[in-house]
Image (cartoon, rainbow, N blue to C red; front, side, top):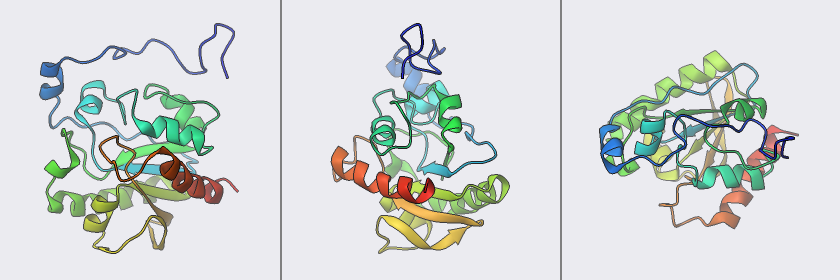
Length: 197
């Protein structure tokens, strides 16, 4: 839905609306992105770790073309397709974002298994603090390693985390060729139906 000026609600010029240079991306290795959280969350989305683009911009899933934004819209979480800078609109939709590992890398496979396992404790503390109804880990391999569940399948998990229901979803990154948009949308829509009855 566009506003009177033709722009989507919550849109505007963000300080990182431009494309970063290769040097800027390299310089963002190891950068952290603050959790996007607030009281009353329906779902806390948990990525694996920030991309270099996110490390540079300070925004979760920071590349504007990241498939997460389209999938969230198509799955019914948002009325229109958000962009990384629409943080207020994301929170208004009852969605927050964190990561298992806080340091930015070019690829998730640059992380050590111990980092992923250590991230579970941090995620559990975030769930206890913010009490989202659900926490959704976005990354099958990372989840299986971090939670020591080598056979975990996408969808609702049997256990809870910090009092929140636990859900597993595929990573929306374009590097994840195993899941195309229709399959991603269907899996995310299952969580949408459970979290927003």
